[in-house]
Each structure stands twice: as structure tokens, then as C-alpha cells.
Image 1 (tube, rainbow, N blue to C red):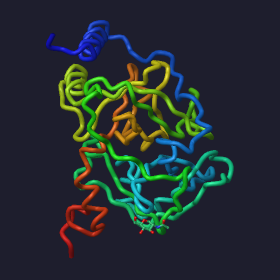
Image 2 (image 1 turned 45 degrees about the vertical axis):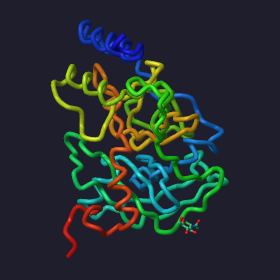
Image 3 (image 1 turned 90 degrees about the vertical axis):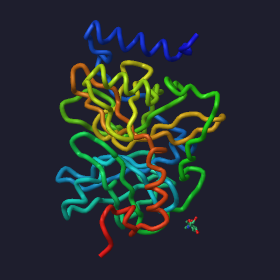
Image 4 (image 1 turned 180 degrees about the horizontal axis):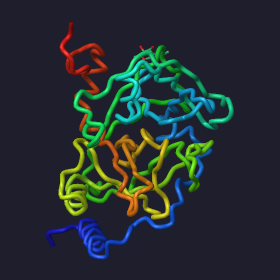
Length: 290
Ligand SMILES: *[C@@H]1O[C@H](CO)[C@@H](O)[C@H](O)[C@H]1NC(C)=O
């Protein structure tokens, strides 16, 4: 047989929704289960990004720790700070309960940010940015850098059901989005390049944004929404929990809601490495050095 069974299932589901035209995500219940034992991957990689608003501090995005001073997040989480003088706020490492001060919590100022030089705020191409902390975070079982993606010959490339997403986004339908106090996580299927492309061609007759993949919550009542941007997406490779990507965008109010757009972190490994080696390099900043 040419198609492995996992290919077949997704092709059937794509053509089914294309024919029926019905939204695949119906009752709009946002968020998954609360994570209380967050001192394990991928939750111990997560960092809350917080800024002050007239209504008080808001966790507007999350980020994933790459090393003790570098975080990775979605383009939309930092693009507004690149073009304005608004402060990008603080990184809360080891965050557990947004309303409390937790045992492993470290609130660290953001020293500087790097937005991918080819980020496109309209199409979400290259939706990736890096954050450098003003000083290194103290690592512990509850605060750890993410484990890199690995090759695994046994992994299902096209329809990867070994994955979870997590974020502090709202967990209930409301006109005013409010954070979940505790990280929430939901199992997701990450679609590989081939499946993502088929889905996007069916939906919009276009290519998916550069460096992105689609994902769909396995429980169709769960989805990503506001403030889940930058939320980790991990998958299992060789028995290890590894960093696949993060939530780039999910227009959770559209009807039908599109799939969840995630940034495929391995696509940006070269750029990330260049920045980690030299934060001021042309490759990293996209601008000639003065
Ligand atoms: C942060 O990581 C660097 C490089 O791995 C290491 O040299 C340094 O000691 C670490 N700092 C802390 C505070 O853990």
C-alpha cells in the first residue's frame, strides 16, 4: 500500500470537511487540563511573558527556554516591541500560578529581543523571535532548557499524535479574554509538511506560512486562543519529550476556526544558532552591522 494508514486518515478528514463545509471545531471551549505537576517536560521549559497594562499585569504570551539566558517565542509576541519604544516587559521563569509567587518563580527583565528578519506580520511567515534575559535564570528540575527535536524512524511524520500544547490562554469562552491562572495543556496532532500543505491548498489555495505547520487538538472541543501565543508544542521522539514548536497563531473566533498554526522550530535552527553564537551578527539581526 502506498499510503501508510496515518496518511489515509488525514486525507479522509480533509476531504470530508471540504465537502461538508462544516466547522471542525464546534463548541468553543478553550483550553485543556490544568497542569499542577509542571516540573517535567515540556512544562518546565515554559516561561510567562508579562507586561503592565492599565488593568494590571497581563501574561500576554509565553516563551520556551533554549538556554539559561535565551528564550524563543512567536513573532507576534515581540514584533510590536521592535518597531516601538514600548518595553517588552518581564520574563517569569518557573511560573506556575499567575496570581501567586511560586517557589521556583524568577522574574527577570528582558535585555533585548531579536525578531526573525523575514517575519511577516500579515502572512505569519517566519513567526519566530528570541528573547535575551538580563541575567541567567537559575536552572532546576522546574526550570529547564527545552530538549531539541530528534530524528526518530518510528515517528509518524504526517500525523503526529504524540504531541501536546500548553499555555496560559483563556480556558472558558468569554467576551473579555482572561488568562488561565495555571498552565493548561491539551494533546494535539501535529500535521507534517505534506499534510499541512494539502490542508492549506484546500482552505486557501496557498502555501502555508514559511516555517509553520498546522496542528489540531485531539479533543475537538479544545483549541488555542489569545495569550496562548508562544505556548510550547512538544512531541515524543525516541521516548523523549522534545521541542517541536510553539503556537504561532490561532484565530479561535473564526467560524469555521482554521487549524492551529505552529512554528516549526527545527526550520529555524540555523538562525537560532547564529543568534546564540553572536547576538549582534548580520545573520541574527538581518541588518548590516554599522
Ligand atoms: C548559564 O549557562 C552558561 C553556558 O552554558 C554557563 O556558563 C553559566 O554558568 C550558566 N549560568 C548560570 C547562572 O547557571
